[in-house]
Image (cartoon, rainbow, N blue to C red; front, side):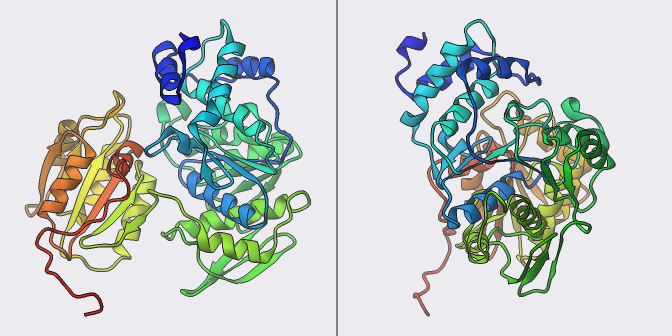
Length: 438
């Protein structure tokens, strides 16, 4: 019972057991509870939607605004390891005890209104943010945009990252339909930044219908550069000689360009200096986004779990240079399109380690392996299945040579599973002892 909830784990277990966990899009339930709670934000709000690049965009906004001296709050989902990662206050994950009164407030306010797990926890996190006396809030949409619980908060600046095919059972079966759902975070008279270099027409149509101030790449802002640095130009400001974002991957420049456009659009209320921009881009961190862990063998962690993000992962892996063998730990949700994911990664991987994941929504490792076998044409490749990501990684480490590469990718549960005990520090068992500096 709610009265016996003493810890965050107690509350999460209660919410999971008492409320439906399945996705149920729609704002009416959340809006009713939020109204009872008197939930409102007294600071500017960025809302970020899109298929890929949302987490990176939120992290860059947070880093730059933090270096500019603002008290930041960032809500992202899902988490990799600990629930508290979903809310960062001034760059740090919220403490569990800080969330507790807000779970209680949601439970008291909702009364007879049923909420999904995501709706309940989102309301608690938003209430915690509203109470934190923030200078700026950054909200990442969980699924879609128009009907996602985050969208009960009116944004001051919408940011829409790349649009691709994902969650099609909920959002539509082409980029135009999915784009229209993402565009639902736009607001009349407010800036709406689109990072996608080839945006669906539905984004522009929605902006025109709402009267949002649409910023498009190539029209309202431009980015380009060489191997050493890049430049950005917007409607009223330009930056030259910028270092590339600390987040790895060619796609991060697309995200960074959208971030600078968003900051330019809200400059009248949230001015940032050029130095804050440079420092923020240089220091931004985000676990699990083409995260390279040094060691032998080298370890790459990436939550790429749909065809578009996996294509970007493959390009980034190609750019890393030559490795004799690549070992891939892979686990994924059952609703993902496996064929294009496996086809894109197939040429890069010599050894597959398919893993089960601790959620009923996941595809069984044996089923993923069967899908791989059905389309595999290589004879020099091996595959095996494992009960969890940690066991799969241990098997990969045991089989790898020091000069090989291990890639852990797929669901947040996959990457989170190998990060559960901290960032792995790999050393292949047959690595010779080499003197430091030798």
